[in-house]
Length: 178
Ligand code: SF4
Image (tube, helix red, strand yellow):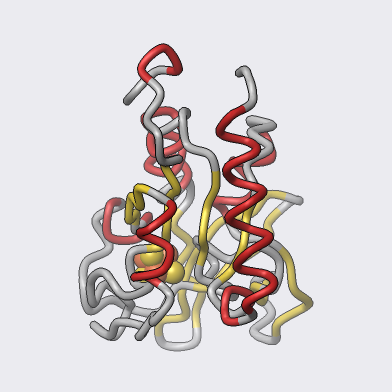
């Protein structure tokens, strides 16, 4: 962790690791992410992968976001039955957010039950059809801590104007007294 009295010139930005850093997706794939070179000019990028950090391994069954008694968890279907993994991601995500609390933004893989900002499918076991879309576990913890960092997903970053706005917003946030 770097505290504010030791502020770096470039803002620290957390980024989903499968976006061009490592093949850490459930099927061992990586997402080609051409914007990395441009982003590295403005930010120190810290790749994170909650699912690998939680010990789920690569490859792994594709986890799904589930809502149980108004609480978000992840799980997967095995032989048509839900296997729920309570708190498995929440603890590592809290550690990331604590360890890098000096960050100024996040770039996240949309639709992921772990990293997605708002378009992750969610399920209500025992049903197997998805019920709607919402933010993943990382966003829930980020909101709980009221961090306020600018956020963006990898699809939005393909637009030059959105990229420029995100860079400006993160720099502004980084230069605020916190
Ligand atoms: S979306 Fe997040 S949890 Fe899933 S592979 Fe990418 S970094 Fe890991």
